Amino acid sequence: MSTLPACPQCQSEFTYEDGGLFVCPECAHEWSSEASTLAEAAVKVYRDSAGNVLQDGDTVTVVKDLKLKGSSGVVKMGTKVKNIRLVDGDHDIDCKIDGFGAMSLKSEFVRKV
Image (cartoon, rainbow, N blue to C red; front, side, top):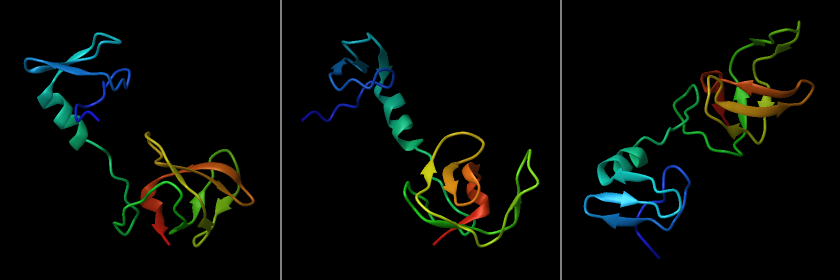
């Protein structure tokens, strides 16, 4: 098993080292070893309103009433949301809420159960 990082462009595991650079034989991408350590350190950590780390599949509760855009509905404080999925973007959480359907929420408005 290789300890070399996977290619950041095509995720190939067949990378090799050439001097101070890593090279991908599949897409011909070259990058420095410093860039790969920075990329590993830049993994985003999602936190709830209390500072707890969130993960895919967690159950959370809504900490304040949230008005729905384009609708007169409101997601009430204390609503339990099961099996969340974390995504990149302005809204961190994709989920399904009973009675409302698929939604996107910001992690600052939920608390991990």
